[in-house]
Length: 455
Ligand SMILES: Cc1cc2nc3c(=O)[nH]c(=O)nc-3n(C[C@H](O)[C@H](O)[C@H](O)COP(=O)(O)OP(=O)(O)OC[C@H]3O[C@@H](n4cnc5c(N)ncnc54)[C@H](O)[C@@H]3O)c2cc1C
Image 1 (cartoon, rainbow, N blue to C red):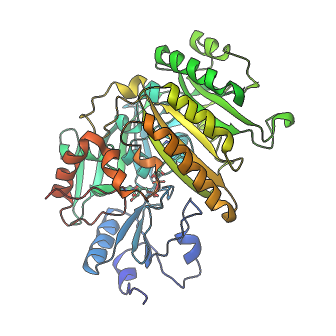
Image 2: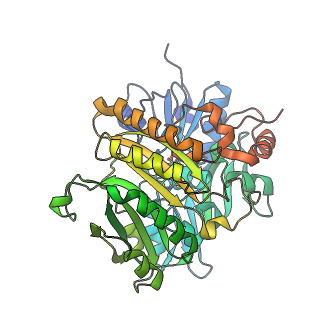
Image 3: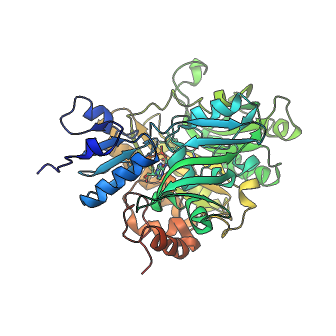
C-alpha cells in the first residue's frame, strides 16, 4: 500500500517529489546505481526551518527518515524505501572569509564547489578525492583524501556547525557550545541531527604537483614494501596513497598502456616546486608512467570525476591498517589481478602525518593509530556485472581482514554488515551511544551506520 504523505508539500517551502511525479526517478536516483530505493517523498528543503518542518512531519506520520547530502553513500544511506528523504541540495550556500581563513558550507554543498570557492582566495580544505561527493556525509564520517597527511582529516578542520536536532530545534555547536555534540559529529556520521552548515578552517594552497607514478603489477609487493618505509618518514606535506587500478582507455594515457592492470602511488605535494621528498619518491623503481604535473588544486581534486560518473554499479568495503605486514601485501598481490572489470580499484589512503596527531578521544574518529584507510571498490557501468564486482570486493576485503584493525572507515562501506558498525566507531562507540541518547533519544536518525541510543 502506498504511504500517504498528504500535507507534506504545504508543510515545507521547498519542492516535494512523490511517486508518480514526472521527475520521481531522477529525484530518487543515488550515486551508486546498484541501490534502487523508492521513498514515499523527497523534500527539497530550502533552509533550517524547512528541515525542522520536514522532520516534524516525518515523526508525526511515523515515516522512516533519511537525510541526503551529496547522495554518494555506497550503501545508499541518503535514501530510504517508503520513507521521507530530507534532501539538502538546495542548502548549498558557500561563504569564504579570507581574513579569518574560514569557509562556511551549507549541508548540501558538494566538495568541488567548496574547493572552487576557497581556491579563489588561495585557500583550501582537506576533503575526499572526488568532487561530486557531498561535504555532509564525507565530513560527518571523517573525510580522508589527498591532503590528509598535510592538513588532517576533514573533521580536524571543522570548527563549528549548525545542527537541526530530532525535536526540530536548531543549535550551534563548537568546542564550547554543545561540546558533546560537536565531538560526536566529527566521525559519528549523521546519527545526531541534520547539519545545515559546516564552518571550516582553511589552509593556504593554490597549486600542487600531483599525479600517479605507475608500476607494473608484478612489482606490487616491492612497491608496497618500499612505500611503507618511505611514507613513514616522509614530511607531512607530501601525500601519497597506494592504488591498484587499470589504466583508463583514453587520453592522456599512452595507448599501449590502455586497460593494463597496474599499481601506483598517487602523490600530492603542495606548491609547484619539487621537494627533495617528492624527487626521491619519483626515483623509486622502474615506473611505467610518471604522471606528476603542476595544476590548481581543484583541478587535481576533480581529476577522477569524469572517470566515475554517477549511476554506475559500486560495491565497496574498507579496512584500517596500522601495519603493512607481509600477509597484507600477499593478500593484495593475490586479489589485485583478479579485478573483474577495468574500473574496479583499490586505494590505501595514508592517514598518518597530521591526521594521526589528534587523540583517539578528541573526536569521534577512533582510528588515529591507523596508518591507512583502505577501500576496495568493485565498479562497472553495466548492471549485469553487479554480481561479479561485489564478489570481488567481498573476497578481496575478506582476504585482508585478518591483517586489519577491528573496524573499517564508516564511509567506505555498504549497509549490509550491521554487526560491523560497532567496530567502525571502535573505542568511541559507548560514548557515542550516550551522546545519541542525549540528542536523539527516540532514534529518529537511523538511516546511517547506526548507533543505538544508550539505555
Ligand atoms: C566516488 C566516491 C569517492 C569517494 N571518495 C572519498 C574520499 O576520497 N574520502 C572519503 O573520506 N570518502 C570518500 N567517499 C565516501 C563518502 O565520504 C561517503 O560515501 C559519504 O557518505 C558521502 O557523503 P554524501 O553526503 O555524498 O552522501 P549521502 O548519501 O547523501 O549521505 C551519506 C550519509 O551521511 C548522512 N548525511 C549527509 N549529509 C548530512 C548532513 N548534512 N547532515 C546529517 N547527515 C548527513 C546521510 O544521512 C547518510 O547517512 C567517496 C564516495 C564516492 C561514491
